[in-house]
View 1 (tube, one colour):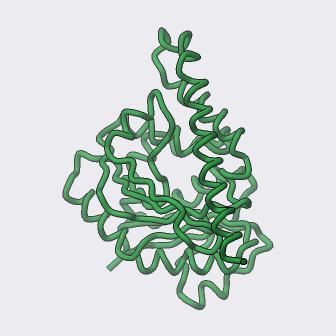
View 2: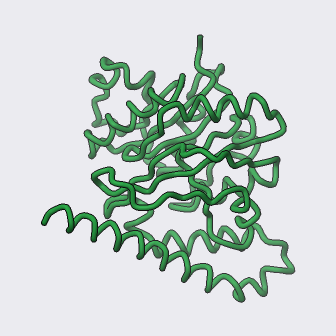
View 3: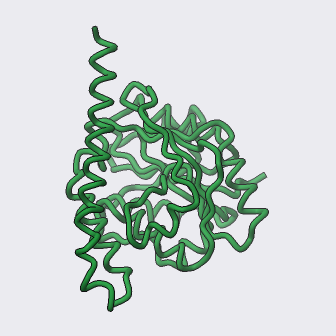
Length: 262
């Protein structure tokens, strides 16, 4: 049976061990078409031979959002539900079966998401994001607490929203979630669906301040015009709280790493 779920994995090919773990976790999560988006220098034949990917597309150098857009556009026409996964992140076993069945049973919903473990470079759990349903309305005025890994959304809804904004370097998922929440219902399921790897090389960790500042601009851009002029009243506290939360997770990761090396 042709997969109705498609997962895009954009990668530069610089973390081969992580890539294989990532792809294996998608296979264990459910029946999905896995498409790898890679630079021309990357040889994907070994991954094809192992059955870890189904197809491959060349990264045209338009940035991460552009690579994901190309991957989703290149998925087979039979694919109805889509998402992407960082090459160092993981899906939990059976998670795609859960999200696919949920969207099948709830045709008025455009997206489903669940809890997500934050793990360090060695896979040890640092914290679990169980933000819940209230994180959806919070998108308009607060931080993005919806974990993108493990989420699943309708391909038609993604296309109707115009895909990911390629002018954004970090907050393109945040922007997409806001647009999807305007188009239909976004639902939380009380299951841990993914693991996000929190380490110094991780894009959103390395560029934390820039990411938080960009998310603020995205959030304000979606406000009604009359609210934008007073958005500074809550934007600065939100940015600072987000930065502090990130520092706490990084400190915990460093502490756990030091404890294991003693």
